[in-house]
Image (cartoon, rainbow, N blue to C red):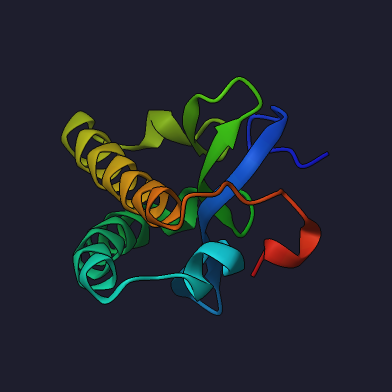
Amino acid sequence: MLKNLADHDVDIFLFRFVVRDDVIHCCINETIWADMYVDIDVLLASFVENCSQILHKYKQYFPNEMLLDGCILMDGCLELMLSKGMGECFTMTDKDMLFSNAKAIAELLMEVMERRGSLFPPTSDTLM
């Protein structure tokens, strides 16, 4: 069973932001990425860039490489989570912008799934 940053059971992993070699990366579910539509990819890029810029400002405070993840839980709810304790480090404005952009990313990825008409199982090979 997949778990998210909050240790909740995950039905579908959507995306996560990680820092590696001082660079912020957005890792998207490979199965969703394989079905990506051009129009959604164009929209997605600006939201990913916005999240990356905000996370970059705070990356020195994160205890590990995992910064933020977005998942659909077993009950069907979307959950966006920062690494434990990190919410206190952000200004309210940055936190609001981060979660607004992260929610937009999740909604766009769910749109890809909806257009394809199927949900993807949470297999380990879907993680980047």
